[in-house]
Length: 383
Image (cartoon, rainbow, N blue to C red; front, side):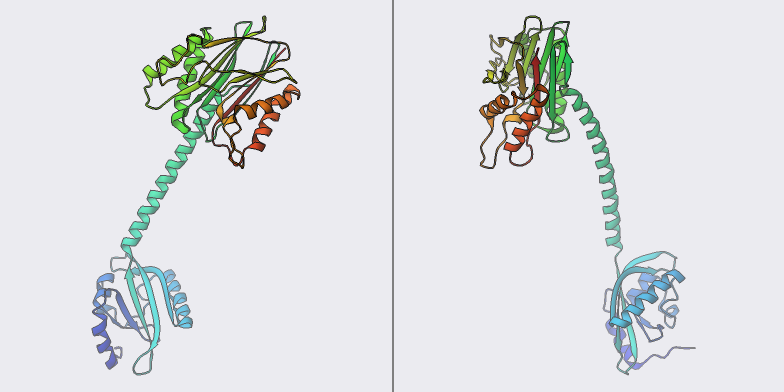
């Protein structure tokens, strides 16, 4: 049975042909009265095979259910807009935005005007974005796994607490990022010596951690060989300049070698904050670095780089990186070495096992906001 074509439809069709979107006009029973050329091209079916069919005819039953629900919504609101697909002759689906509006025709009948805006390019872009995001997520996961491994390696460079002979060592390390540039160790040498090392590579993150690893390995080799501390600083300064040659790079280090039998300590620092030796209830003694920062200038190490320090039973030795001292309070005042010296004097009145926590608690209370640099702290009690 043919479909009735009202006279006004011919006038409307002339307008529809000027549109860039596909358009169908349907009656109250959802039968298609007219389509424009753009719609023909989108669906790939000539209009003679479209007009007179129900709008659901070209969809699968499941898709038709979606269309029916959207139609009900459009009838209630008088209009609707949603993202869906348009079936093509070859069985594929064209992604579209469907906009529908119910209105009265010139002869008083209810009609539906539905436009189909192709969004294939948008969908391709979305798919490309999804794929790119997936690749980024996979790469992020790989980086996180690599950083987790690097963090475990970094932990191996941090000084460890130990009890050796008559000495106790407490150590603390905190990286401001997952990995950082601080490194250190407490390592017995032979039967009567304990070596201590704190180092700080300029910068933060992966690059600094890689350099710190290389320097740490070289310094450990020299400590095991019992190289004199001044010679060791000289060697490390030359080693970094000749083998790394990084412009603007430097590192600092504090080295100590304690002779347990004679209760003497050799100390050498290169641009590092001063070590401290404190007897409870007394003002801490400062052991200043006699050499400059390492890895930047050939003549950085002093000819008299090493200090010879006498120790007494009960003395406590404090080595640290500048992440401990270069912290600021709410008035933008830096704690500095004088401030830490006061904290060390106060905390030295505590039992040795509580001294580390006492210092760190005081530093945390001083600092405004989160840490901004890697922080290392090593304490030794001489017995």
